[in-house]
Structures are given as structure tokens and as C-alpha cells.
Length: 239
Image (cartoon, rainbow, N blue to C red; front, side):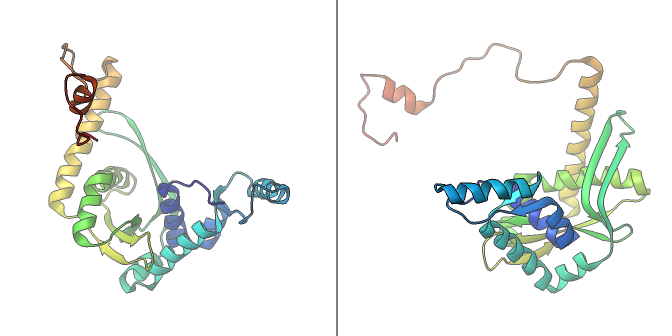
């Protein structure tokens, strides 16, 4: 049966395979056999496979095929293939102290190309320019990159150069390569600085900003008000 695996896990698996290679993938992920777990034999084979996995992230055979398809598409894209082929530092973890707040920060990247263009693989529904612009906003890719810049500069003394390899998560797995524009990055850097300052201040004072302090009026949604009121005719349009 199909394992319930979040899209994030499939994205991480593709990221690992494309940037770190097969050995790294096999050390973290385990492919489960396609068995009928309703049968005694199927349950036994599944239990045996779980033992063999030894704590690795579990993928079904079809999910593994999807991950390999996306990684293959990255390697078949001329520009993406050159980017992932550059030698870099694998499984890089950077810990640093934020100069403005004193906060201890941590970042981890599957690979960093010091002095070069560091690629980051992102899976997506659509790699088309208009669609991926929305993905940058929806998933905070610019803010993530701005945070990585702080750690990279703290570790290496220079600002990094990043690019995104966007690969579609449905066959035939279209691929596009983007660098996030400076106007977007300027906003993202201000946001990350604001968030760090906010956390730093809260750590010092013990006061964590949340919702408004004043009493506010609140009502149930309009559809509920109409359905709950016996004097309001229900037309079916509310549903």
C-alpha cells in the first residue's frame, strides 16, 4: 500500500539524491516492498522491511520512482547538471551568533559551493516563471535564502551566491533555474532582521508578542449565522 509521505519528505529526498548522490540517499531513505498488508505474508514482509530500514525514512516503490524521476530530470537539464556537478561541501551545518541580538543561530545545507554558485533544489507543481514567483512568496524561499546569507557570511566572511533549481513533481518533470531578484531579497532581508530582533527582544524581556491585548467583538462565519437562524430561509447557496 502507498505510504503516507508528506510532499516535504519527497522534496528532501529529491534534494538529497540530486545534490549529494546515491550513497547519501541510500543512507537516509529505505524503499519498502509493495505488499498487501491485509494478508499474513504481507504483514510479515512489511515488518521485516521496517527492521531492515533501521530508522531511515520510508518510501514506497512508486515514491522512490518519483524521486529518481525528478533527480534524473535535473541531471538532464544542461544548466542544472553543471550546477549540481560542481564540487562543494556536503552536509554543511553552520552555527553562528547574530551580531545584533546575540542569538545563537543554526543553518544546514546539503551542499555549499564556497566562492561559487550554490544550487538549491526545490520541487514544485509548476516551474513556470509566473507560478514559481508565487511559490517564492508562499513558501518563504527568499526569507530562507536571506537567513542562509547571514550564516554563510558569518562562516566564510563573504556573501554567498545562491540559485534555485525548480523541478516539477509530476512527469515529465520540467526544470527551470532561477536566481531570486535583488528587490525581493532586499525585502526578505528586512523581514529576517525584523524577526531576529523580535525574538531577541522577547528573549530579553520574557514578553512574546501575540494577539491584540484589547477585547474584540467576534462573530461566527456568515454561513453559520444564516443556517443557525430558523427565521432565515436556507436556499442551499450557503454550502
